[in-house]
Length: 311
Ligand code: SF4
Image (cartoon, rainbow, N blue to C red):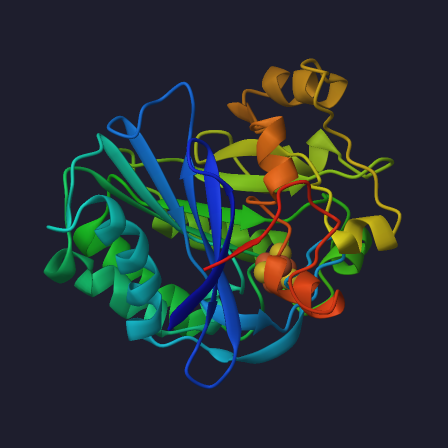
């Protein structure tokens, strides 16, 4: 793997763009989460696939799918970011999170399980929090069975599992995520097995669009608040979102939402993940530089504010 370029701001988030041996491009992210210091919380977001076959309607990573990344290639991304700051591979952060959620649906890649199993052979972390975010595509049952085993064995208290479902309306969910997926009862059945009282609740993530469909009755019917928490994420200014004329329901300057009140009244914990506005400008939390750069003749991206610096 050769890291070709970097964009962002070292004190908030940096996106690295790398070329793999076969010429495929990937990207990975280091994110600091103010007001936390890096010793309190440090988050890495890595790619699991080269491109993504799913093609969600707001995600620039969709399309140009080449292949799964190997265990070694996923570890290379982690090692690149860790060894820059901690050459001894000892990570002192109170919370050290790795999100398997940059480019690619992680359940399409069985090597993600090997990374989870072998992490401690390569790095020492005070509090390692693995985090898998998935759209729950059909045909991935074997992956999820293994994920359940590794979670119970090694990360029962710390593991964070997120299902990105984006709408409580099945037709709208299919439009946003245009592949065959687990049904809501299927997600609920698996989550009941995955959840443990000592561990973290399972996140249901919604990138709500305006006007989007969200019904708390459907939420309550399938997803008990004792097991699930609800997260609303803003729609980031990706090229695809602009092309598909999608508007974010969550806005930078608004902190109170009627839907959020309804969700809270039904007994759910809720996270409104507005994040740092500047992070959107960097494009570190959703916009996918690789796909976008391919559409824009190299690295001359004008969709994001921060310039891409060739390394
Ligand atoms: S949001 Fe995830 S699953 Fe959907 S296209 Fe992007 S990387 Fe793939």
